[in-house]
Image 1: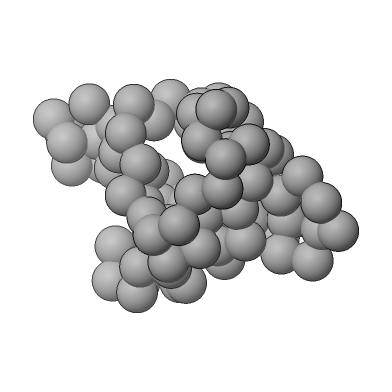
Image 2 (image 1 turned 90 degrees about the horizontal axis):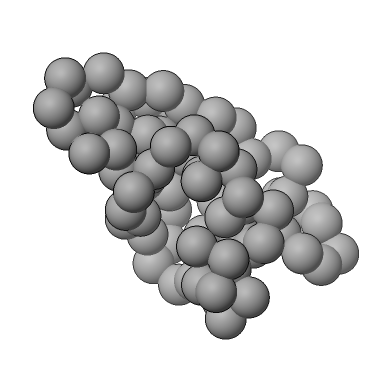
Amino acid sequence: MKIAITSRDPGLDGTVDPRFGRASCFVVVDTETGAHETRRNTQNLNAAQGAGIQAAQAVAHMGAEAVLTGHVGPKAFSTL
């Protein structure tokens, strides 16, 4: 299973970011292999609107089946 974790820093040693749509990056970890991939969320950090939806689409595109984060807004939640 792949799990997306919102993070303030790239890699496995980063601090979990409590924001979903405006998290600095997403670290997707494959729980079966231990492999991980980081994607920066730069395009959504200063977005006027739609950050949560775009972040949810990015996480889904990375193949995540679960998300570890803090707050997820209603539109991002329905997109996930």
